[in-house]
Structure formats: C-alpha cells, structure tokens
Length: 220
Picture 1: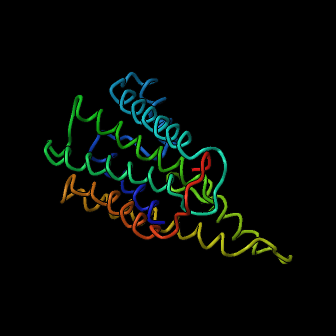
Picture 2: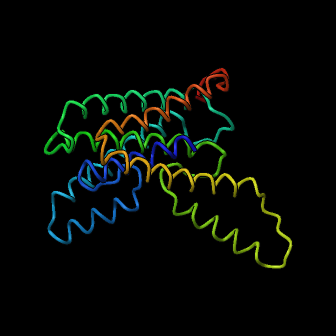
C-alpha cells in the first residue's frame, strides 16, 4: 500500500506539473498517446511515448534482475531494485526543485522518462510478490473488489478469502487518498511533492530490511 501511495502521487504530480502524462498508469498513458497523435498534438504524444518507454525500460531491467520466478518474500534483489528506484526518485526531486514549477523542453521530457522508469521497475518487482495486487494501476483491483461485493449479495456459500479483498480495498483507498493529497499539495507546494514517492519507497525498504534471505546463485 505504501508503494501504491508512491505511484498515485507520481501520477498526480506528473499530470499537473509535467504536461498531463501518467508515468505509472500505462492504460491511461496509452490512451493519451493515441489521442495526442490522432488530434495532431504531437507534443503530448511525445511526452506519453517517453513515459511509456521509460516504464518498459524499468520493467525490463527489473525483470532481468529479479527473474521470472515468483518469490514469497522481499529478496535482496528486489530491495536493490527499490533502492535504485529511490535513488532515481531523489534525483528527480533535486533536479525538479532547481527548475521552474512546470518544466518544459528537454528537462520536462527527462523527468517524465525517469519517473516512468521508476514506476516500471516498481511494477516489475512487485509482480513477483504473492500479494496479488498491483501498485501502479487499479483497473483490475476495482474489478476484483466490485465483483466480490456483488458476489457477497448472492445467497450462496463463498469460498474466496476475505483477506485478499481487504488488501485490494486498502490499495484502492490508498490510491485515491494519495492522488487527491498529492494533487492538492502540488497546487500550493509545487514540485516538493515529489518527495512523497521517495518517502514511500524509503519506508518500505526500512520495513523489509530484516526480511531479505541470503542470496543464492541464480535466484536473486
């Protein structure tokens, strides 16, 4: 849920401060890319394409580092990827604070690409964990929670675990609250809001410090 807070905050501040682009939500970002191209607004298409490219690069690098096999806990390799994500997020924060509130040109595109990379890496590693939720997009989470609620209204025995649904509902609540909070804070605090995603990853790294088992060759 902390990583969800970071992703929602990243999308909110990027949409408001970097030209209406989503570094974390590739469904919305792909739509913006297509609409920008179809309407001849190629500057918007370029921003969306860079976010998508950064996301794919981050997810690809995370996949190479972690591997395809699911894990049951926070391995050292996963924590290392998150540590790199944190370093990039702090770099984005520091650079953005030296620029105008709403950057343009090459700095804007570079910030979008870097944030897209962090979100792709985060998606890549959390997909290997058994939580069963995504931290960067919530369409499937909305579907799961809604169908669960609808199913509970039927007078038939249910066997699906409530714990999974509680986690998914918590992710939805965190996503909404973080997007609202980051959007509100950006209106008067500006790019300093970029500290929220970095803070979320830092807390996750601190909380999982004692969970990483010894690395074995080829397992991460």
